[in-house]
Structure formats: C-alpha cells, structure tokens
Image 1 (cartoon, helix red, strand yellow):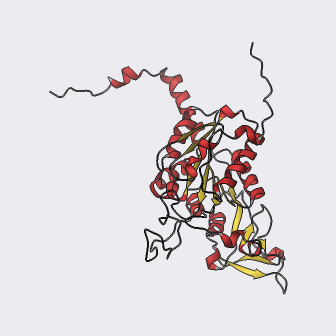
Image 2: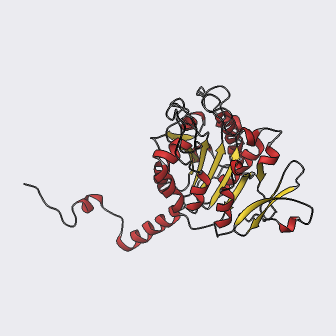
Image 3: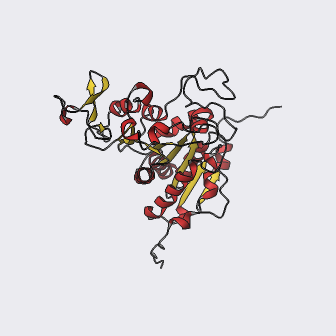
Length: 341
C-alpha cells in the first residue's frame, strides 16, 4: 500500500541550480530568474514535476539555472518540444522560455500554433528588442528606425508586438510585466502558473550591453506612473502620479482624458480580463507609449477554453477502447505497401 507523504517545504534556493549564471552583469534576466525561483515554492509541486524548455538566445540559458528538469532545445522550436512533452506527460508543469528573436522570428510559427491550440503551457517571452547573444542585431520587436550592426541606416521593418500576436491567436491568458517591477512580475508569473491552458507572458527586459534603456520610460520612477497603466479586473483604466488620468473610448478609439471637469470614473473604459470577446484585450495591446498612451501592464486576458492536451488524450483513450492498443509493426506493414525494384 502506497502512502502519500507530505511535500517537503521548498524555498527559492531549492530551485537554484549549481551552474554559474553567465549573463552579463546588470542583465534584466537576473530579475526574472529570481522571481521565478520565488514563485516555484508557492505552486505546491515537487521539483521533478516542473520542466523548463527553451530555444536559443540569452534568455534560453534559463533551464541551466533552475534546479528542475529542463531542455535547452533548438532555435525557435521550444513550443514544439514542449507540446510533445506536455501531451505525453500531462502531469508535468511545463514552462517555455524564449526571447523576442527566438520566439517571434525563426520560432514565430511554432509559437502561434502552440497558442491557438491552447496547450497547457506557460510561455515567458523576454523582450529586450535586440539580438543580445549575437551582439546587437535588430530583432522583430526593434522599433522602426533602430540603428544596429545589421541596420546601420535604421530598421525599415515594422516591429511585431508580442501581445497583439498572442491575442490575435486567441490566447486564453495574456499578460505583461517588467523586469524591474519585481512584485508585479512575481504576481504575474504566479497567475500564469495557475492558469489552465496557454499562458503567454511578455516581460520588458533590459539588455544593458546592446540595447540599454529600451524600456526606460516604463521603469523610471519619475515617469512610470504616467507611462504605464496597471490593469485591474473590473476597475476603470486610471493612471498618473495623482491617478487623475484615464482611458475612455471615443467611438472605437481609446483616448486619454483628464478626470474632473465633467469626466468621472464611470465615463472611463473598465477592464474585463474575463471577456471571451478578445477585442478589448487587443485594443489594450495596441496602446503604445510612442503614440501617446500609457502602456498597460498586468493581465490582459484570462479565460477558460478546452485544452489541446486534454482533448488529444481523450481521443487516444477513445480510439484505444474502440480498436485496442496499437501495434506499430503492424501499422508499418498495413495499407498500401510496395517494393521498388
């Protein structure tokens, strides 16, 4: 007779591996790693039930630094590897760690299909708007006009916006946080872990060597109250140092308004992260600092839908009941076979 023993009480240090962390001093990745290690003990899972899978890039060294199972896989393919693992081992909690280059360039197609299937994965995309590991080429999220080693006259590509892509693929959980906002980041990662289905989290992360200060407007303590907007479900979109500004709709366009002088909180747009209609979340994902808006952080969308991994295992069970356990050798020699002479 087996006896379920209580889990040992784990601490963040229990999730730290014995590997030397080889990120540049001052890299924003350190903060994300620290918050992840803080969140892990709160999940109530043994370490052997947690897996981190990454692609290629600075962020993708992440699995080395976690004392869990993990795989440093191939460029852009982490969602595909994670999909296979989660399908075969639904008892595992699987995290995908990727960057703006890895996830949105060579891996864009893999990322999109993992999201639209609603695999039970937690995908964390580190967005520093540059290829850091290969020393400073422009990435899919670099702003137009960005001068780098590969765009000496300025990028002429329109940048991708990760959350717009995730919501366009109808991700069931979509959130954004910032590497230096450690309390907010930890809470966001915890919410992602608790979600059942694809949780997609974008983290504004600084590359202090090749793109230092890319997100300064959202980090500077003197400006961030006016340049960011913290989303709270069921509450109006209010921001500003004195919380005296808000967002309301003018037709289908959001506009920044000053509270008072005839404009009350009830006139503002209210956040509904549980709306199954993704249009509001998509509208929020389009609000950019360079267009005069505060950039939302927090949970944009959190809805429930059937999970791919559940559905495919239900189909396998149904097929097994109907046809018995499969025979691979028999399958190889079934149907139309022929010999080439």
